[in-house]
Image 1 (cartoon, rainbow, N blue to C red):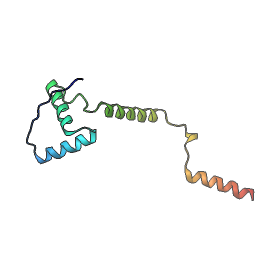
Image 2 (spheres, rainbow, N blue to C red):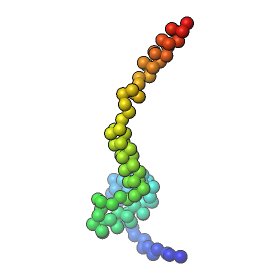
Image 3 (cartoon, one colour):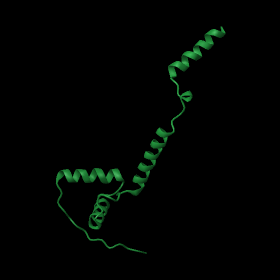
Image 4 (tube, one colour):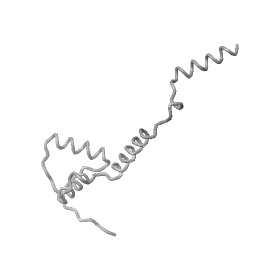
Length: 99
């Protein structure tokens, strides 16, 4: 079994940094320690702004953006668009005419 060797570190953060770290780690579903490890790896690799902390989240966001783009490009024809009030009025008119 592979065991990762880790060293415990302590550091001082400003309150705003601590709050931001807690919020961001929670939003990404990571522990604070994992968030810091990934941030350090990216910083040391010189790619701090280019790689996502959570690739699954980035993939999902990309999927949503693609779906929105496709939806805008391939909107429904005007015949498929309707106003609910107009539809009810038409239905009521038909019912009244039958009587």
